[in-house]
Amino acid sequence: MSIVKMRRVSLCGQIAQKDDVLDGLQALGVMHLVPLRPPEPLAPDNPERQHRAELAFRHIMDSPYQLRPYRLGIEYKAEEIIDQAIDNRRKLRELGDELDLLRDRMEALSHWGEFALPPAEQLGGQSLWLYPLPVRDRHLLDKLELPWVIVGRRPTILHVVVISPQAPEADWLSVPPLEAAAVPLSRLEARFHDLEIEFEQAMVERAMLTHWRLLLGADLAAAQDADERRNAAEQTHDEEAIFAVQGWIPVDAIASAEAFAAERGVAALVEAPQRDEMPPTLLRHDNEGAASGGDLTNFYTSPGYRSWDPSLIVFGSFAIFFAMIIADAGYGLLFLLGTAFFWKRMGASDAGRRARAVLAALSGTALAYGVAAGSYFGVAPAPGTVLGALDVIDVGDFETMMRVSVLIGVLHVGLALSMVAWLNRGTGKALSSIGWLVVVAGGLVLWLGGEGFRSLGLLVLAAGLFGVFAGAASVREASSAKDWLLKVADGLLGLTGLTKLFGDLLSYLRLFALGLASASLAGTFNQLAVDIHAAHPGIGLLFAGLILLFGHSINILIGIMSGVVHGLRLNYIEFFGWGLTEEGYPFRAFAKRKLPV
Image 1 (cartoon, one colour):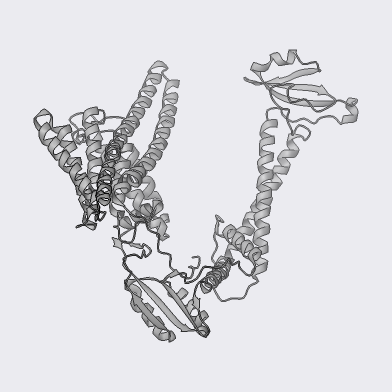
Image 2: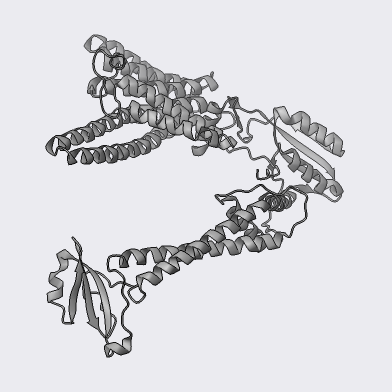
């Protein structure tokens, strides 16, 4: 788990070799290109065709039924396949919209039964308008100056027919008239049946098109690769007879780059990055858990090249924070079972394997913490049992849980400060980080030590603040009285971080608050179910089950949202705020796209 070291590689060759070299570099896929001149705006040869091809390819790849693809190399007419896919996409969308419309109209007419309105000439210029009027608005009919009649009723709805020669005004009644009344229900049902068959046939056509996905994907990837090559060609440095291309390459790929240059007969210059240069950041990990932490890190920011890789800490702390917020073993078991159910399916891709590692960690940690908290869908285990013996955390103990939450914050922020101090050892920045660590230690002595350790706590706190002041002031060189005044100002400015540190540590109290809220909601829903079952024996059992199902489902959804949002927030804001002092940019290899599987 580390940030990969980079080397700047410059390749120089004859201008006639340029296209061949760029094509080879793209196939090698190890260089992050550096523009040697401002890029010019480019467009593909035929942007409309490429857009249609991308649209058709996505439509085919998103098909729920994937058939065996034709092998690469056979001849096929790409334009015909693209046209068929676009037409199929349009047809499915139109059929789906009409089915939804018919479904709504059938639902509205199903309560009125089968009927056919008489032709307009038989009504003497009048028309019939059908209203599903709520019973509570019955009084509006008494104010209506048009003929009306109630032809049916439901517990909450009156079926009202109004006679009027023109379309009703919007404020006649509290609801609009039925739009589908002119067509009998049986005709709507027949049309719906026919449309369903057409929709199924279109889905079969879409499945048949998936035979072409590998060929179409290969052509599309080749076109996109060609666009990137043209873009790269516009960023090289060209003289009359020679060209130069430059980029960053991982140190472990230098040998392959040098072999490539020797094979092509071009000159290669490999240089280490200068102090004032900022190479791209490439996080490389040996296992799926750390790789998942890298994904979580890069989701928010890329660490600077000379910074450090926080992926493993982010991965572990996110799992712990999520578990503390969920605070229930029953919920954790559900998450674990869901992860196990989709485990094989998620293993089909690199992204899926990293995602399942995150889910497994979150689920397992939530289960373990829930067992320690003694909560199983809001029910505590009986004392004297095995589960009761494992109940060692009382989430309702305000004082203890507040201390635990803050101490977790101290450890989390302390790790960040320690890494910054180590990376910048021997500099003023390291002294400032050490100073903040001492400030945190002094604050803990004052908070937890009581009156007997008050003097010691104040002494440690003062020493830490002096370290912060000295570290911030030491950055500036002083050669005059003005410089010394500015050094003092820098030191005082550095001390303003005290309020940020205090606020960030208190921010970890959300772990206690959200965990308590989750446990309280689970217990509340359980008690509601018990009360309604006791009050209404028999039918109360059904209502109690519905309350448990609905209540715990809502609590799980709230817990997942809170666990993800706040679990990541404590990493991205509090932890990164103290641990990542510089932001980088991700490594993007100039490489050919992979073909669809």
